Image 1 (cartoon, helix red, strand yellow):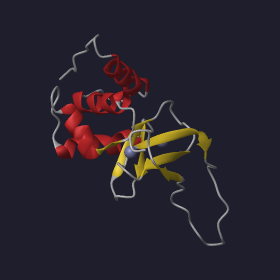
Image 2 (cartoon, protein in one colour; image 1 turned 120 degrees about the vertical axis):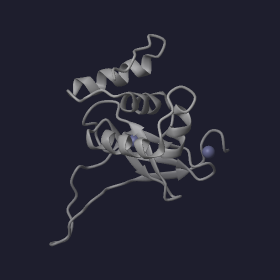
Image 3 (cartoon, helix red, strand yellow; image 1 turned 30 degrees about the vertical axis):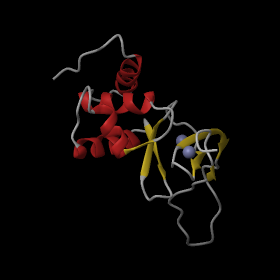
Image 4 (cartoon, helix red, strand yellow; image 1 turned 180 degrees about the horizontal axis):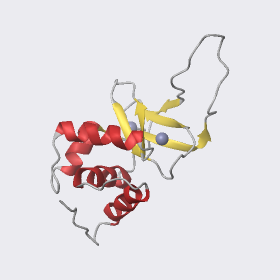
Length: 146
Ligand SMILES: [Zn+2]
Ligand SMILES: [Zn+2]
């Protein structure tokens, strides 16, 4: 099935272009989920992505999970571990974007990228240790929770 293109939805057009640029197969769930991440002004939980898609292009829970993993694998999105043990997802502004810090609101959980605070790609660890992830989270209050 070929996804239909809507001129009224620039994020959907951007999402389709990003997926095509990687020579990846375009499907309705892939472009819809990426468009939802591009539209959001903060990182979205899996549940929030599902809710954002429901009115226009309902995508079932398992598919949303799979598509989010797919987007992260393809470097089209990244995931952020929250204090509530919930992953949040954010579209990557540019492919291969630098790892960066995040800000998480302790009031509402709202999480945004701090693109100006970049993280080293490698860190020196003790002999025999193997690092899997490097994260830096600034905690505080968002503009809505002052
Ligand atoms: Zn907040
Ligand atoms: Zn980020």
